[in-house]
Each structure stands twice: as structure tokens, then as C-alpha cells.
Image (tube, rainbow over all chains, first blue to last red; front, side):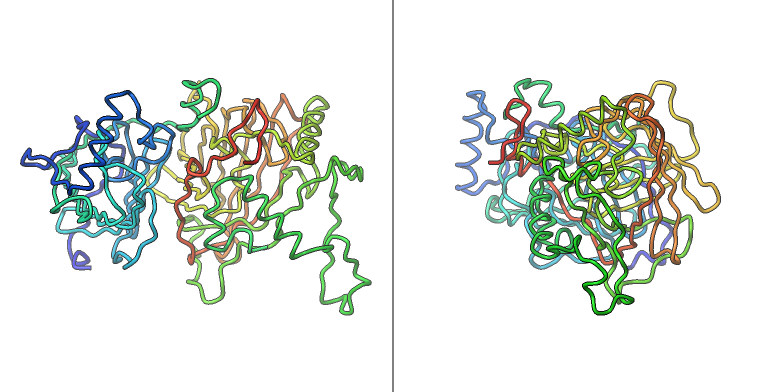
Length: 214
Length: 297
């Protein structure tokens, strides 16, 4: 690793919350997401269903993982545990964990997973996480932007000078769903003293659906 | 019994019931009659250690309606040639895997916890329901938590992460997370949760974890021993064999459901060869309970 001779990387360990998460993702320049025709058709189906009050296209309503990058915009705290070989992200949302392995390469043919397979590196003081190996059962955002199994995600996180914020950019590269890679922005704020409580999505769902049938 | 939990594919099986069924099939196919094997039947008695006696029915009654689910035995060890363990007694970081899998977590194999009569009756009812093929829909079947101490028995890897003031257990099974807060007392009114409020401290080279405030919807063990929210667990972890294994002494105390406190011992093996996999219970939730009873679909 090129970073071996550098000063220690910034310590991101702690609890964070997303700031002002958007309902629908847009590229940084404010343009519309560059959907391919087939992905646009699927997106429009999602929008139409949501307008009818039918969110059955959204696995999150059944406690399935939101996938990425949507999980990165879920408005609940998460915890980073930074260790020399692995950076752990543990989300309050249904206790979902992510592991980004430092100093490793993405496998050529990663198995499709809900949260993908992630490797990490330090680019100066920026943490860069590359992920692949996603199933196509999740959405990019709450609005219903689709993606395919070809999705590759690059996350770049940089600690603000005062150490209280993380500024992030996520690049979505999915040639089956988008005509070009596009980048979104996110910001996180430290939550000192906040301890993530145990959360079981099915428990919350059963409280709102007393019959227990989904 | 490694076939139940070490193969890549089987570990993808998301539901406890499915897992148990798969493991039972392996047990039936692979160790048929092992419990009945006697030393006299072997031509090399000295080479074959006798398996200690263990009941196969509750109270060793012989009543088939009280048959206990056979344990998984052995397993959990790293394959030869794996990276050497870390001998630092206070550095538990890495992946561990429990040896064996007991469905009844009492003071000895095949022996139930010392439940008070009312709760022993409930355990009998649950075991009978299981043997009728209509087991009670327990928490893990509903994609809720395994609860404690049952979670520590689950035959899946556990990754331990140590950061300042914290030891975190990341369980592969249902991606359960235990946060153990070091060197601080329990809060005066801890929030009730499935895995409870856990605080830890080192006593010499032993990590002592004290856990309270555990949700009483979960069971002590797979067979269905009850606990209350006054369940109190003390776990003592100590590296043995130069760090190749972690010894756990679990002490279980519950003034509501138990006659007295008891302890049991487990071994977790150092598994540098294992990387925890994704496990999404909700993906495979085909056992939604109907009127409180799990119906296989």
C-alpha cells in the first residue's frame, strides 16, 4: 500500500448520521440520472406504482436490505469501526453490517449479494471504497431508481478539517441501467455520545402489522 | 458434523428451521446409530474414546414425544495450514467458531436448565410440539433475534472487533451485533433488548462480560427453555492452546424461571480462514407463523 509510509489515516471510528438525505438521487450537476431506455421504463413503473400507493416494488417495506447506495442515505445513524485490515460499517437499520477490506482487490466475479463485496484503500486522506457483486433486487434510492447486477459503486469519504463531518461522493457505474457513470454527493455528521440501539426490522413491522402476515 | 455448517452453500441457508432440518438430515445420514455404539463393538477400544452418556429424551424418559434434537458434535476447527493464532491473551480480534451445537443449554449435555416446575412444563410442551412437526414459532424463525445465551451457541462464525472502550461481536447468523461496553456499569434502567445490555472488563487474561435486560420473548436454547427479563448472564472468555481456541464459561441466572444459577463450558476455535458471509433472514422468511404456529411451506 502506498499509504504505508504516510501518517496514520484519519480515525473515522464513531457514530455518524447522514445530513439531509434526498428522496431521489441526482448527479452533482443537478441533471437527471442518465437512465438507459429499459431502466427508464422500470423506473417509470416504480413511480407509477408509488403514486398509486403501491410500494411492493420496494423490498425495504418487507425488511429486505436497501442495497447500495441507498443504505448510505438511510436517515438512521451508523457506526464506523476502523481497523487496520477492515473498515466496518454497522448500520442501525436492522443491524446491517458492511465490511470493506483494505489492501485487497475486488474479485473478478463476485457473487451477487444485497450489500455487495467491498474493498477499501486510502487515497491520501480520502477513504475510497470500491464495491461490486450486487444483486438486482434493490433500488438506488427511495424514489425507485433501478440498477442491474453490473452495478459498481465507488465511495469516497473525506473527514472535514474540524473532524465533525464526513464529505462523501458516490459514483454509480452500471452500464446496463445508466448511459454513463454519475456521481452524487452526501454529507455525514458525527454523533458523539450516541449509542446505536438494537433494532430488528421485523419487530417494528409486526408492531405496525399486528396480524404478523406480510 | 462440519457438513452442517462449514460448506459455503449450507451457510447461505437463512432460516434456523431450514438449517436444523438440513443438519438433522446430515446427522441421520452420517452418524446413524453412533449414540448406540458401544466400546465392545469396536475392535480398537483404546483408540476410540467413549462418548459420554447423554440423554436423548428429556429427563432420559425414553418418551419419544420428548425426544431431544441431537447435538452437532465436533467441528469448528481451522483446517491445517491456516494462519497461526495470535497468542496475545487480550487481543481477541478475528473470527471464531463454536465447537458443536447443543440444542439444550443446561448444565450438562442433554440436561435442561434447572427450570422451575411451571417453566419445565412449558419446555415439555415445546419439545412435544416440535416432535409433532408443529414447533412453536420462536424468535429466530420470525427473523427476530436468537436471544441470549442461545446466540452464542449458533454454529456460525463470530467476528470480534476491538476498539477503544468496546468489544464488538459481529455474528454471521442474522448479522446480530453485540456491543460490549468496557469498564463501565450497566445504566440504571437499561433498555430491554434481545441481546441485552452488556458490559465487560478484564480480570487478568479473562474477559468477563455481564449482560442484563434481555427481552423475554427469546428462549435460553433451541428446545425452548424460558427466561424472564431478569435473566442475568456472566460470560468468561479466556484464550487457551496459545490462542487457537477461546474458552467460554457461561453462567446463567434467572430468579423467575430458574431454581438456581448454573454454568456450562464451550470452546470456540480461531478461524483465520473464514470470512463472514452475508446472511439475510428476511430473504427466506417462508415460515411466517400462522396463529403462532410455524407451518413449513
